[in-house]
Length: 209
Image (tube, rainbow, N blue to C red; front, side, top):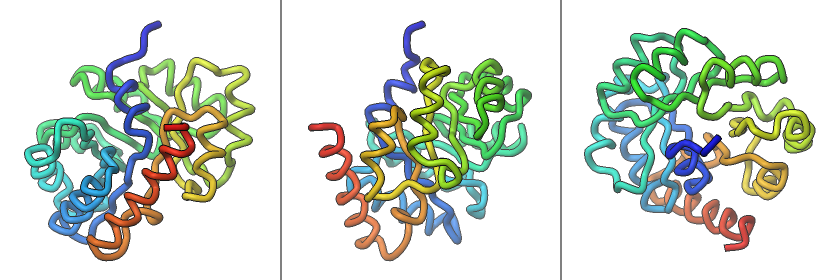
């Protein structure tokens, strides 16, 4: 089966920054700093006040090479609001077939959270574009290697437990991208931009670019 356009984009981007802002303004400022630093995967979570507003602002201002998505989606209403605001993909901490089905109706790539082989397969069968391996800190890169044997066709993106130090291990294990939160989206805009540049330089090294 050919790869979907979004999955190709996700592979290109490599790193998705998970942003939990204290306000919509703070989330936008963090996202803009990350984009300046080269991190083009942005996930504004619903733990950010007025999350759809932040997404709408970024959807208008971000470069075409960026992917602006929504995270911590738990209800269809949240999914629809983020889609209307301009989100180009949606991430949830869990697997909900009804949520995935609505995302497919909206032509919105869905990245549901799963951790066990049964959960991963169920999410994939429900129509997920990629599986958010969450929390990645519970399992680690060796777990991905083990999954790739029986499930080589299911794309995985770990979130949680990903750092600059183990970035190479995750990609060597076979993930298509990684989600990063506190290691990237904290500090002043200048500090965030610096962290973004550092992680993207490490990614280029890992990929042999």
